Length: 311
Length: 149
Image 1 (cartoon, rainbow over the protein chains, first blue to last red):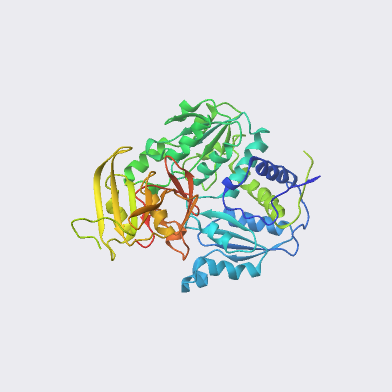
Image 2 (tube, chains in turn purple, green):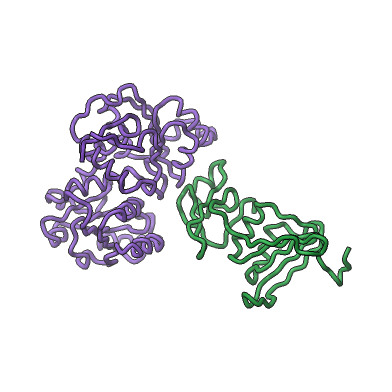
């Protein structure tokens, strides 16, 4: 058993702040946390400050805390707080930190988690700040990929759907730059990857191809699907056209062979047909389950001296 | 005191090697003219850069917050301090590694545009100049929007 250095008391604001060694430490710890680890966090309190709606992130953090004997306080609706009286975010954080051992924050404004971390003496975990970062989603995506394939290095990973605005895509693609992964991007031209990120991936020699059709993306080991958001389209008829063109159905998935692993950060609307769900490679609900495991590991590393299994 | 027809700096500042057209922005940044005389040369020939803009201001001493802003106007901007009609010192301006409270984030949903916090930018690269908001992590592109502007 070896201790995971560098996590205790640490803020988790951006996946970019984590080295490859950090990521591997976390994934190893999460494997160990698949089983019941007992009340490791008894007496610890997590504050969940959700300034905008969330289902999976909030509930999985709460579940992780409860499963380790800790407790949770917080709110899921900003309207029930003094923010409506004009309280600043910094003041809210300075007040909440004295009630808890760590804070999870989701906020519609980019950078809110960084600002919260600067004002908190307890660790702050970013549960999503606008379209910027959602680091624990990236951690659980990496964990799901490694758990399903047994590796990360050497994989061919495709990203399908909204490549331009999808923060889960950007964050996972950046994290995959730590590994020897070939990345393919599949989406409509108006939702292409932001130029800066595209250039970074290309400069690192990890950009395999950018295509508009799923059939042009073969072969792939992993396909990461994201929802195309209606509000991004000024012309509703264009959205309707793209919505049906960028949809993965069972026949489309099967053309990649039986080993394709399909991930989706959820919620899903129409981009993955329900007839895909019972394919063995359809991992999105397991991915959501893994969210609890990974968040258990992260909370334990941050709030206690978690011990890692020997590698 | 120099005559209006023969203006030579006695004690003041020369802002030189501004990219052509940038003198107008520099005047706005510095709130010029203030008390003393100001001369502005636009599109003047330059041995090193072909053409440049230049500003000479009598009685002006620049603060760091002002030189940080001027540095954003171009990679070769120099500031010379003139004392007794002679150049006492000269420096080429550099954008610092971290800019605090100098420019505003252009992302309307960045937290710095909604909360009481100074915008912070980190310099990712010098040439080409690449600045990233330390909060929302977006890159900021010229033209920069200065705090207080």
